[in-house]
Image (cartoon, rainbow, N blue to C red; front, side):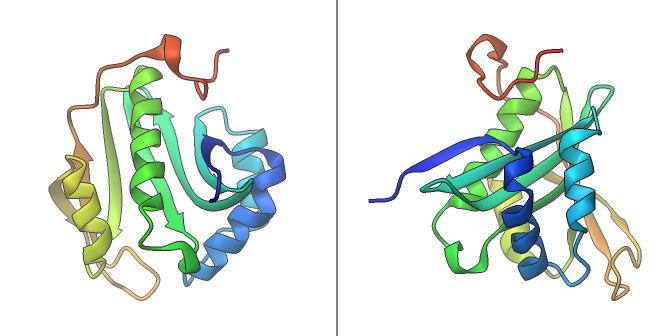
Length: 162
């Protein structure tokens, strides 16, 4: 049986997270971008689900004022359908609540009904569209989570204390 853990992304995870990014998105972020997110961007937090120590899913968020804006969520293609997307998203939402955020937003492709279904399951609602947002001119659906779970910062091992 595999050991499944959830934690903050580290520099050591960048290579594996970038490989997931490349496998999942037509215009992936660069390895350097992920490295900067982990080492330089004080607003960024990345949560990783690890299976036997190896990243299999990740989610990124930027904390701006009281909003957590989700930058990306991805699950390694060969590990989809195992609940890792929900696990990493729930962990990120809790981290946002524990960090003092009041709400969250994201963009998702209008064609990505699987992701939209997960986000709605977790309480996100449709709030608008961004026309021709993606590289192929596909529109983005803008979704928001207006009610985060109760914060428990004292119990959150992923909380960054500055």
